[in-house]
Every structure is written in structure tokens, then in C-alpha cells.
Length: 70
Image 1 (cartoon, rainbow, N blue to C red):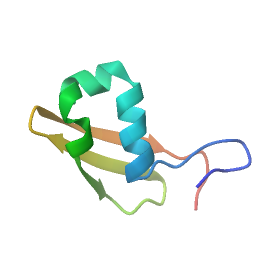
Image 2 (image 1 turned 180 degrees about the horizontal axis):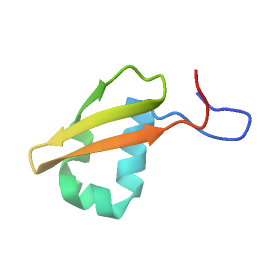
Image 3 (image 1 turned 90 degrees about the vertical axis):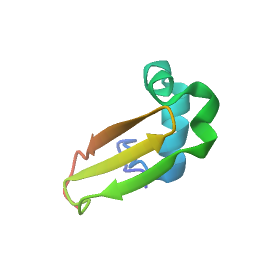
């Protein structure tokens, strides 16, 4: 979903693209394993979106704060 201001709520596909495009994140997960990430959304998604990303080489938690309340 994209708002009028251009803010884009991440989903599994766009989060995977974001990680691939961000070398500091990709290196934590193993750049050769980015197509095989296990991505789980946790939380209720009202004020923030929180994702747990797991690969055989590491894991991350990414929190996206939205600029509005849905």
C-alpha cells in the first residue's frame, strides 16, 4: 500500500527487495541466501509493522513505523 505522500507499507515481497538493496542488511543474512528468507509479520500492524526475517546465516527484526494511524 502506498499513501498520497509516497510512503510505502512493506510487505513480504517489498521487504525482500528492500533487504537485497541494502548491503548492510543483506550481509547479515548471507547475500547468497536472500531468495530463501523466512519472513514473519508479528504484531497487529496498527501503528507499526514488525517483521522477523530468518535465514540460515542470521536473522533480523525490522520495524516499520507508519506516518499515520490505520
